Length: 364
Image 1 (cartoon, rainbow, N blue to C red):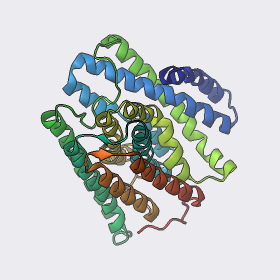
Image 2 (spheres, one colour):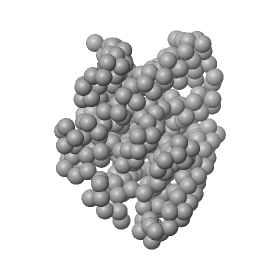
Image 3 (cartoon, rainbow, N blue to C red):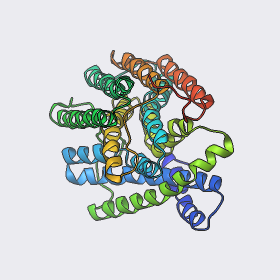
């Protein structure tokens, strides 16, 4: 049975999760079925966006993918902000970045290298994305590092996060513009179409828009149920919000896209595989994270600040450096993939044993 068919079969959990939510089912059961239901809906959003891209052309299609590439995770985090779970939101930002760079890229390099040996890709595109990645991590680190000096000035804290967020969004827009105008002819720009599919559109524009709308509404409903059950899950299993945010939420929102990266690596198309892993990480760091700052302002309540714990910063910096070093030479092998996976497993273990963040996680 193909991967796409398995994902589509998970659609059965969408009505199950909605019914369970309406019936007031056990929160743990609701969390599981909601998470399983979000996976195929996120896949449908990606598929519908690609179909629209076939009709609109590469430039508009790339913009659509750059905007909707992490729609599922963005929706989940918006509901988490509404519930005041800001630690969960920040952990999911970190988790998405390290998940794409360590887990997804690691699996792609490992399995692709085992099958094809030494694999090559365009070092110019990879080098540019690696540079952007390190810059994005530096941008995320700046408010955290300076927070200790302005901790008593809430206006300064907010102003710093807002200013950094605005610069990051502008930089992301410039990177998307550059990818449209200076893309290497054989490389996939970050934020471009991330699936390998036929160049003939299978759905009409109307069908694509309907599926996109329905899938988005479904994710909204299931995200509300998922976030509502988080507190019960953390209490029942003794998990911290950090672990759920760093490991579980990114997997739920992006697993379909993750597996696509591995599939194309197995077909020896590392350009496309790296476009998924590096591109998605850049989108989260330079677009999703700063946008969430302004969304939290609009929603009222406690504002999301780009202030991460020391543990999260260490994870981000280590991940960015290791991934950048591997991507810079334009070549990859299975050992490099194994190294990335090893770092991911060690970080996952560390965050699994990390206690809840209620005053126990120091800021730098």
